[in-house]
Image (cartoon, rainbow, N blue to C red; front, side, top):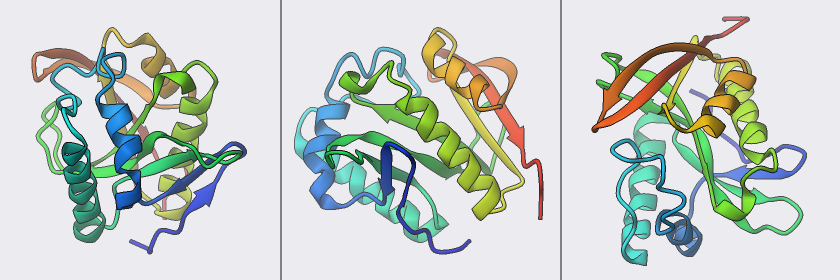
Length: 181
């Protein structure tokens, strides 16, 4: 997998997580509104900044082990930490699937309903297919999270089956690379 360089979209800047993101990640992961649809699929709420620092270290280890992982998302106009987005290699099993690339995103509530989730998901889908030449990208969301499910469908992922993950009813999505290697 090629070494990933930070990149931009019209409104967003994507880059690997650094320790400097601890406060922003803590604000994201300690917000009950953010965890509304995460249930058993998104980890526990962060109780203190040290939990967020540990999460960043875990993500950085994924960069080394897999060459990919979730990235920090910053608002280009201000440099403000908005949340994260990106692809990660999941060894599984989730929905009886193993070794798949998962598209995900999570933003602080003040950035919801402004098209940022769509912009981030589209950017990472394009990056995964065009730059990384991945054969398939998958995703899953809480069945009740209509906003996230709408984003996944809008960027072109096909709806699959419903399944239970961590006690949460989820919907599976996937897309094949339209122009494989």
